[in-house]
Image (cartoon, rainbow over the protein chains, first blue to last red):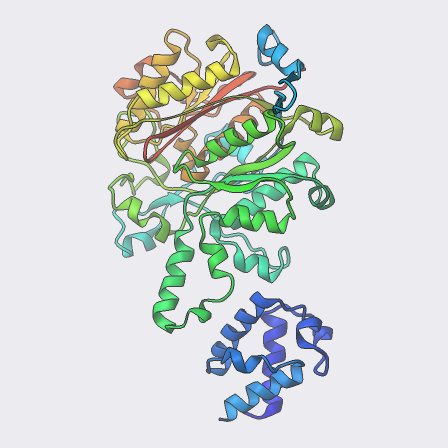
Length: 81
Length: 435
């Protein structure tokens, strides 16, 4: 899956299933703050990644993610591997 | 005669602050009034719809063929649609509400609107919540199925636990409405809703809380009702669903499972007056007991003791009671034992009796709260709802003043009975408000 496809899919998930407003999607800003995500939401992100991208998130790997761009890269790398 | 015929000693208790010596707790007996009601049931999804259905004696029972395919002995059920809350509640809140929580939420929104309590009032005050609920079976079953399929508990999602716990209704509503007062769920089987009102009444009467949201919720899905169906307790009159629930009728053959949500706003009279709230009625008595007997077979002694305690607590004369909303579920033994208990307590005083379960089916954990709401609707609109499908009264009904027709009459005092598995019993006394 191309990175652009990953970005588009994650945006779709955030807007449709997480009910995030499109203007809240700011790739270079802190993801948790701009998307107003709390610790419980992170559990649901894991569920949605498994559902839409077909792999299980390793939570320890998520600890290095700060921005949405980091998140896109993480998902892109996992899908590529 | 005033609305609820308070006797002199009772009036004195309410007017006087009873203060213990220094260093000990101060006890204040406050009057407890009802300032809001909300309902989501198979008779309608708001108070107006339910009022019309009660007056017209409409049944909310249908036949569900899907249950037969699942192996149910009876496919009869109350007919209730799942509410659509997208656009009304945030994603997180919707995900955390189980089916019964959705019904309770909508009933509570209606009750709070009626009571004139907005979000700012709730957030700034110390409003409590005590709600009756005794299962969240479908949420648990879905989580267990997913766990077995995925073999990874993280994939159950964050909301699963908040849907699955017995206290799902109170934990969610307390969060959604930003409540700051008492908050816990009361699980007392099919008397849960009544006990929630009774406990709220006691907490407000004692001065520990000023306003409490109380009520009852009941999931109606097949998964939640399967084990109850397995007891052969449900009617199998499947060809005529609306005639299947027939409390006190000789031809009854079991109950029909039903559900929904019912909410009442209880508050001290001082609080209601201060807010200039419309007062719908007053809670004047609560009685409870346990049978100390069989887990599912009722007796007459336990319910009679709950009724006696309720009447004693109310300070009313038996003759003051205009109407008894019976627990009667349409099972032969249950109806018979309740009839015995009413006859034992009321004797020659024969208030009108009907079971609204003839229309709703058995709303289980919600029933005590919904039947209090139905009774208040009748009181507000000057009628007694009929015990429909009562064609040939059973032998036990000979000593009861049952009505199979809608009666248009003013009600001042109503008793509502609720009994549950394990022999838990509750009786509530509600009266028209009068200074």
